[in-house]
Image (cartoon, rainbow, N blue to C red; front, side, top):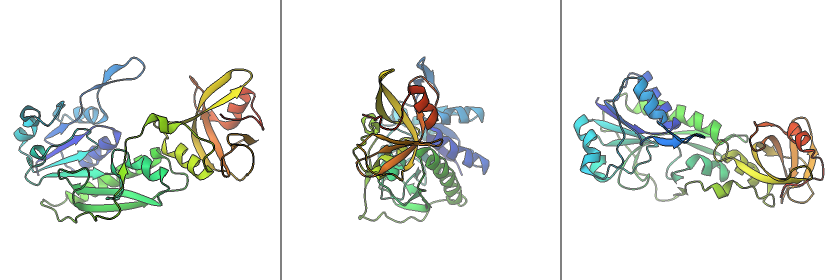
Length: 311
């Protein structure tokens, strides 16, 4: 079949690699325009663009698909189907109807739960027991199209967005290849009207830890924002004053009592901090300009101990 691919970040690149590994070579790849990134803010290509160029596949980077000019690359490709994975640009109806069999989207949730931009983080924040991937036939709505294939996976108690990202990318690539093993059009099932939730884009302000919240919520917050944007808190000590600290690893702690944010215990593997209800064990922390490191080294570096407190 004549296949096109539209995607931008690493998640999409992994799905594209799965297509290539099973013999599906896109006629054209669409990805967002290069963006400034890194300390020098130099223009950087997306993960999808890097992979496509390495494979000798034609790459297009339209600013929008809302114009005839922006959609011309799709019209010229004469596609049977366009696969869309975290592309980042809205596909208007005029674009959705260009391929003979329409557009298939790989979405990282069990639709209709967590439609929208940040389904992985929202699933962990909400304490969902499971999530998954849906291969969806796209329509004009926001992740509202009928589902062609659905694959579920449990969310582990120590799951982070990073680990869930990698597993869902693998599941999504495999599910998509199963669908494309036969030509379209594909049988699909309409999403139920009940159970719709929206995964709003993550605001950086959400990453600040409020220790007055229950430990179970603080733990989810730390795991959901690993690796981006990284959950953080502030700690004060005589040596440096107040310093912002990122927290990368956590679990529910065994201790109770103490004021929210108070350090209750320090061990080789973790730092136990009181919350509004219960406590959390912080396993890996990071000071500004330094590498991530274990809890004990963090405490020794700042001269912290039991009784010191996060703001």
